[in-house]
Image (tube, rainbow over all chains, first blue to last red; front, top):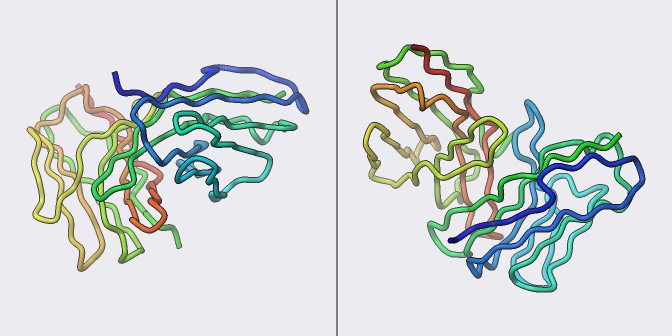
Length: 113
Length: 110
């Protein structure tokens, strides 16, 4: 089954404790991206990657890091989480071609206290 | 100016009603257009792509107006199960960037 898998799905952590949210896709997609979704603000892009070893900042990259060492994986790293990073996070992937659609993981609820 | 703008609603309609959502986009280089559906606390899922000639999928009809840079979604004979948030999504080929509207909330009332 074609899917984007992210973990953990739910996490409560404390300020400053490094955490990683993993993302993996099995569709051989070149493009992967991380978004956060907050009430009234919609989906905002954090980082994206067009291919292995190629990553770029989105609209709200501060406080986040990513890596793309393998095509299927695109982890999101919060080196020193703060309460304003409490949010719902989505990983997504797509092909790079005309008419391509984007597929989302199930989401990760992150609370930083 | 936001890349994609849509009326957040909420739209509260009775079962069986017809409801229409509109969305405008600012980048004339936009190449692909979609409507996604998002249920509460779930991931967005593709509802339908939007083609230049317009397209229909059952009770759902999508239209694209490139000249005016807007897309629309029409839902006929609304069902309770249509209650969700509908996201307008635009893809720009350069950089393969996707831009999302903030979503329009629909509640279908018995």
